[in-house]
Image 1 (tube, rainbow, N blue to C red):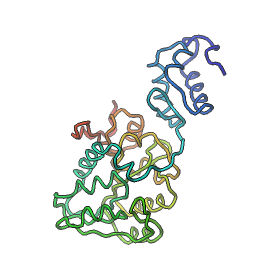
Image 2: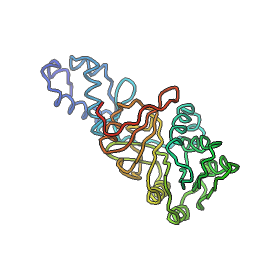
Image 3: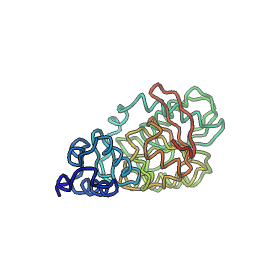
Image 4: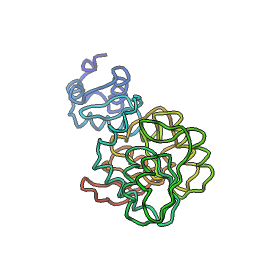
Length: 280
């Protein structure tokens, strides 16, 4: 369909235009702000607002200069690739997340590059934690930390991740009553919730979530608005989300509306205000 043939932008209501943009993304996979602005005879800012509204509804996902399908699946990048990507931002997220922990807690530390940064941020704080983890890297990171007890789950080794998965992993989680689960995710979405790339690892994450009184999700901005293969838990299951994203990201707005406490760290690593059910 040639949308430009339907008249100037002022003759098309915002509701109609957004429905057409949604269909365009579904048909073509990707749209650009500039081309749509020209076709509809409106500003790029108007198209951006349309896309923001569609993303808040879980229908599309923003990218630089445009939008793509919300539920496009992706292959999991290697651990080395993820660890090197946004490393500074992940450390800032990790340091803010550790500030939420109380001395003496029993904490499940997930696998993944952002949670490994949390393990590093725990070092030297003498919190006296009991750590339950499927991550060999996190266990090694904290092995010499004074007053810290490390419990490594059993299970099948994922060689590239150096983490453990499987029914043995889940059985260990069910043995313990934990205070906090620090969860790494592949995607955070208002509709699909907290998602992961893999069925087996996602199942282990569900068991971990069931073993803890609260969930702290650590996720850099690239995870927000993304949906991967398996939903681990609804967005409302998160007690906290710690991220480097601006607070007005549609996914974070949706999270606050569900009662999730959102903590955004700025580019210098300083935590911003915690926001709960607060209009922007």
